[in-house]
Image (cartoon, rainbow, N blue to C red):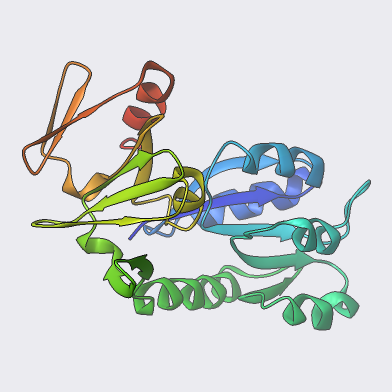
Length: 223
């Protein structure tokens, strides 16, 4: 899988080192660079990220405080010139901690841990339906339809209806695989057969592509 990355660092020289190193690793995809934590907060409201390269010592808002403020934080590798922050970083379940200046070899060691984490992670969702709790592999989900305060989760030959809003459902899914294409639909991009006009075809179902979502949906295949 491709790991979507975001750099948040206030030092251009550190940004350049990370950009150069990331570019050398095939499974890392650098989505954006932010100059401070405030920019990072704004960016994460619009984009889903798998991995943060996060500087700790920044003006206005430190990397530690920024990461603690996130409700559903991505995985993180902290970067800093100050070793005294290491313990607090690991207490936040950081993947690793890079002490500046770090070599490419040390960088590879850190991102290899990230790759192993995502490779080993088989994701499931729990869906309460018909007085039962079903464990569904996310790779078996084709698309999800909103029914107001409920959602209808479609698999290849069946569907389940559960009491959950589309937004809550979307927040629980990996954004590199699932994307909202309409105010009432989320699709698994891996199940897409083809697009015809403003309709996505999945398992013979016709899923409308809303104008508000279509551009981001198409762009996601290029990222």
